[in-house]
Image (cartoon, helix red, strand yellow):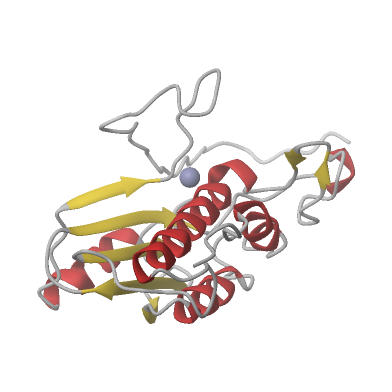
Length: 215
Ligand SMILES: [Zn+2]
């Protein structure tokens, strides 16, 4: 038994960062994630949700195992626009590793967390099977483990998590525990764990008056 070669979360995070998944573009991120999860035994569902007046958005639900407890990891692969590319020390979708830091849009929020979860799962499932981590090493969890990953968190967020939860509920899928990979640390990794999160508000500002232009 050789469990000394765990799956590298940095490589997974780098590959995810290289996917230009600016909301609502999937950018290859969910395809990459789906492939990795299928390799370690997950049943993967790719779900595209629609709403009049908004762009269609791709999402992913994946599960392995059966029965309870049912742990779900929830997250998103979409990122906010990178702004001016020239303002970046390293191009925003290069996944550059400089020193011991991974650079790029989404490295923190939250492709890094997804990479850590996938790597940890791969190691855990392999350890349960007594095999090396990686595509051929996956065993079964005690209970069920799911990933509920949306591509619509940073945008208007109507074709993502709410519809994924509705989709799951309609199929009788119930979750016992949920882990979210949103960045919460203040000073150092792991210095904060939260049981909730700030809310968000999307609005439309309409300004009436006389249109002008000065330059
Ligand atoms: Zn986030």
